[in-house]
Length: 207
Length: 246
Figure 1 (spheres, chains in turn purple, blue):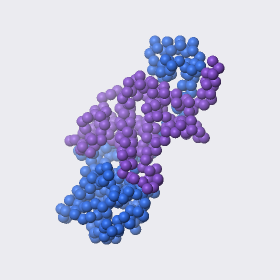
Figure 2: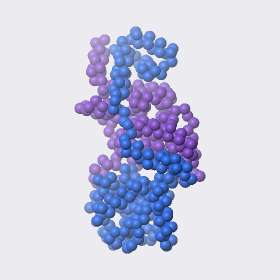
Figure 3: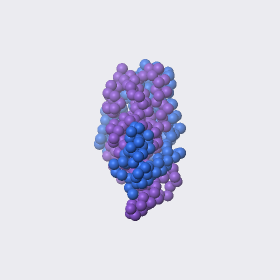
Figure 4: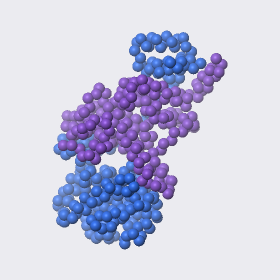
């Protein structure tokens, strides 16, 4: 019993090659025990990667279904990292599809773009965070940094994954995780800690 | 005084508790001697405290939890034990109801040919460049565009506020007849609404090859909506459309 090509073609490599049959009842229990508790984290990751609340819900639902279907192939130690890798892939697929969809809708109407186009603001982090409440300020600053850094920071500082888990989710070596984290936190410090920044600039010029 | 470039990654790893004992000792020794790296450690802590602040992390909204709970595969034990392949399970209820309906009242085999063509036309339309002949979000452009191309006037209501923005229209062919295809979007999904003159015919709803289909008749026109959105959402589309189209 194999899933039709409709789904296999959209599957990404890291989810495993062979489309399995849906897990049996016992595995369903395991899935609910190991995977479903990470729903919040999955949404958090999708939300910061896509920066789109509606799309995030679609992505996470899709990811949960895919995770369920592929659950028989889960052999790793961290169910959360495994799920997050699927969420990340679903985000990429959805965003690629969103961009492809753009070519279909030639708009004589700018609202069409606004509705269809993935908001992809990469504003200056400093500008993006001005005049907002604390939480919004921090959220906006995170959303404003480039994706590889954003992803690393969200996985580490919001989701509390270990470096090894982040490496597993993002498919890069631990050393790369470290440098991305460092860059990401540096950008956030610059955006969110203006006084500290000024101080250190001062001390730089003095010494 | 800036942090030492060769220590920056290690400083981050230190506050993350990712260094082994030997490296911890080495980096802490360095920090004790280096003002710049002490400042950097403080900044890292400050950033981490901000990021870890309450409310920065998004929690899954209720609507998502409800959607997950309503997904047959994920939610209930019964669904997991179903012998149906997983890809069939979404919209399962609709599919079962529809297939029963088809068995019960389906007369001519030409009906299934039409069903087949509706779905394959929908799939074909999703290929790049095939979706619309007239691309617009403006109903007042789509409606006149059909004039002169077909001998009937399909209603083209605006449904953006119902979550189905208009994307455009095109001519298509179903069962040898020229039909109007009105295209709406649902998030990243596409709804094709086929319209052709036709009296009678029952309301139908079924899922074929994973695509939800709904058909109805109003004002001498037959409507068939096809999409990969969940059957429940397509029902919502039909209701919104019928309500607006009058």
